[in-house]
Length: 567
Image (cartoon, rainbow, N blue to C red; front, side, top):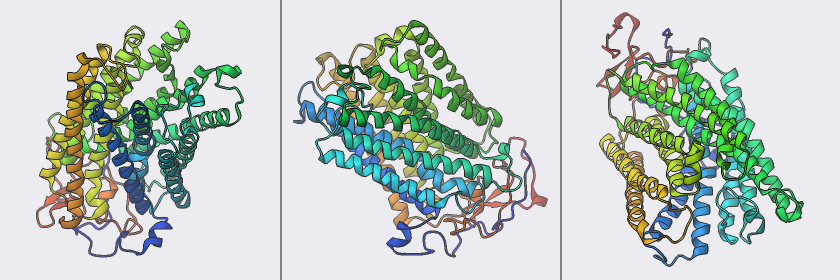
């Protein structure tokens, strides 16, 4: 890809002492009514991390209860059912789905495009308040008798239970609008606000991943909204859509639910893949290998994701032909996923790899996603799925994909853009230690679940046979290690806010447009209108010890390193 001219604050390379989006205005109302995408992204970040803390607390309580067979902490059967339901619902709807697109995407996307804001700033703010409204419904559920249906709200149990299905369903319904508004905003922004010279194939791959994610958000989320609306009507009016006592079909709910919820897995993982594409390239000091293949594979995953929902129902009585077709299509989605992994490995090959904190999380992502993806093949296969259905093998598989992969990508992106967001650097060694503890803790928590699941331990059970105790104990101890790593990561970031050094404009040597403005950015993102650059041209910058970061190289001084680095 050709390199374009940089016309922003080239030469300074350091922290701008001027005004920025954080100090441009003050007071609570300046945040409540802000239309600035960066402040909205920051508010999302605080919100989703609070939800993650709540969902994580539920998880640690569940794992502690499962330390021994029978009662361990005094938690009852009903409390256990409600806690794992709310753990799943909070983590899925309030953290994993909005985490990367709404928080990091909101902050980064317009700056990567060289734009002042998203296309519809007011819709962006409304999206955040819809997310807040949906979150409040879930919190309300806690005080209205809890929820014990599982995060899937499967019928007919969700019609009969006395717990607060209505408030939880309304919460998820409102959250759907938030997701649709964000997706619509991103698509219009990418179509209309790209700078001159930034063609589709000169966009950073993170933007490609957000674009593919937005397609899923717009097309799939309405199906979930209608499904939950029908469930709400079924519970309140008894109209007989899903209730077999009234002539309804409970399996129909599963079809509707998974038509959204399997594509939703890619709402979670695609933005993470986009972040990893950026991190692997920047910290290997090499242009991304197979740019177009990675870009098109994002679209392929988004489209194929709509065709695989039936593999969740191999045991629900669908026809053999339908099961075979869904099995085959599910296998095919491994192709674009593998394309990404192979291209990331090819990018690192003979690269000048730096194991900074964001790169440590990117490496964790590749390992965890590969394990999650390969174990998904067992669940795509008809015969093995029947054996493994509703066991801990499934729990482990989707935690590797939905939690381990998405979480490490989220943390990698957060540590990568943290200097840009806050204007502060953090202790990199402590960040690396946190990344290592999280990786070890996650594998200790969830890998034993593959084994006990394959040996018949069913999921969602309050009690279990003594033969599974060792696996449960390993899993519980792993969850403690994982929790300790996450708290260390949080402490590293909080400490940077209090005592961190001022961040340079470009601490990592990236060349996408967000690294061409000060840290933190001014209210309008750039002092001058930027021109498109090749986001993966690492000959455009060199490290300057005086500013502690990278500065643009004047064209006359550029030389080409045959190994892809910078001289």
